[in-house]
Image (cartoon, rainbow, N blue to C red):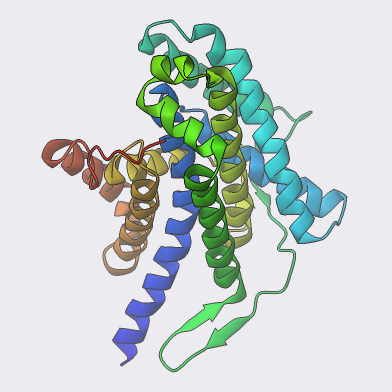
Length: 296
């Protein structure tokens, strides 16, 4: 019974981490869906969300729900500006140019924001806006932090589903992901649709940044590198360009990382993610869900 309880506890921890990865992976998969671009700067938007939440909590002491809303708005604006400044001028350029630009934007954000006059290059503690409470059941326990992460992630995914599959804007996103030229002929504003995709993806990454800071209360300007890579692997695992694939991939990556740390060694927790990526590319490059039509 004790072993079963430990396994269930690790499952909860894995789902907690996987939920954050899923929020980040959604941005990767949405941007790839409409622009065929792997936005390597997306992990840094996740970092920007964590720092925005940190300053809102420590400097302004505003309610946590306003912190979430303001952070999502600001990171959404950051995504919009990055798309307009860095990616839109290269819209007709070869894909390799966009890829190199994405890496350049990522490095710029990391090293510019690490200046002491902006953020700081050091690790800083992320203040938890509430006391952590553990709810004990018969064989496992769940904290209010985990409940918060599961709830917010679930609500966010539900709203994203409504946006993509039940609104005019969502239909435009799906149309652009299928064929930009045909979508343009149908009267869809391509630039506006791409910008909206960046805004939504960046807002979700910012939300993930706050949740990550609350769950693992230590942040750094380079904190987006590994979670960003793991979330990209999650998007590839589920089938990049496919929304539900990104969610499932994030949960699988989170569970894999936690179980390797718990039952093997935390030293291998990053290595196993790249083994997963290698196996996916080797055995099923299109990911678990392959090339489905429901892509954005």
